[in-house]
Length: 305
Figure: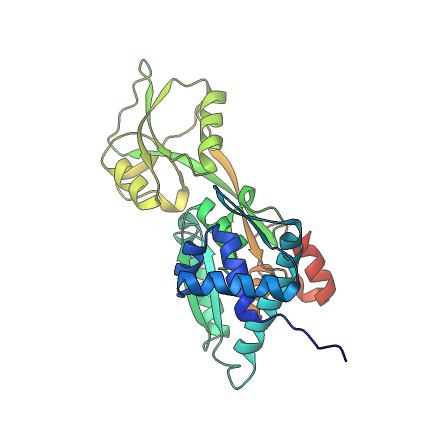
C-alpha cells in the first residue's frame, strides 16, 4: 500500500521565506521562528520531496532547479491556504487587504478609492503599506502584499490598470532661476525608477543642472523644495504650499512622464478582488482590464501574463 504524501504549509512557509530572503537567519526573523527550526523544516521538506531544494555554498543559499519547480506550487498552495483561512470557518466578514502604495499616489488619487472601498466593504481591515517603488515590487514578489500600486517598470507582469502621470518641476514661490548657472535639482535617490526619467527629461531640455540634494521620500522632497534648495519633479497634487511649478518654455524643461500600475496576485483574495473591482469600474485608471467580465481562468492567465 502506497503511503499518501502531502506538502505541509508550515514547511512551505519556511521554504518560500528562505528563498525570497536568501538566508535562513532572515527567514527565521520574518517568520518569528528560530534559525534552528527553519533549518530543520527545510531539511524535513527536502526529505519529504526526495530532492535538494537549495545549494549551500560560501555565498549563501541558491535554489536548485527542483527548488524553482516547487516554488510555483508552494506559492499557490500558501495562497489558497490563506484564502481558506480568511473566508471559511466563520471569518467571512473579517477579511484583510494588504495594499502596497507608492507615497506619491497616496497623496493624490488613493483617498477617493479608499473612501469608496470602505463604504462598500466596512468590515474589511485595510493595511496600507507605503514604501518606495523598488521595495513595493520586492514585497509583492515575496507575496507580502495582496495588491500594489507602483511604477510599472518594477513588476514583470501585466498591470490591471495604469495611470499616466506627469511630474512637474516645482520650486519655492520666491525661487529665482538663473539661466547663466546650472539649475539646482532635488533628485530621487538611485533606487527610484523615476530618477532615470527625470535625468532624461533634463538632458532633452538641454538644461545645465546639478544635484544639490537627493531625497528618498515625498516628505523629504517637499522639505527640500520648501527650503528653497532647488527644483524637484513632483506630481501636481503633491506640490507643497508656498511653492510653484516652473512653467515649461518651448523646447525647454518639460514634465517627466511616468506610468503607475495596479497589480494583484495570480489568485486574488476576495478583498483584493473587491479593491480591483472598484478601481477598474471607475473612469480611471486608463487601459483598464475589467476582471468582473472575466472568468477565473482568464483572470489568472492575464495576471500571470
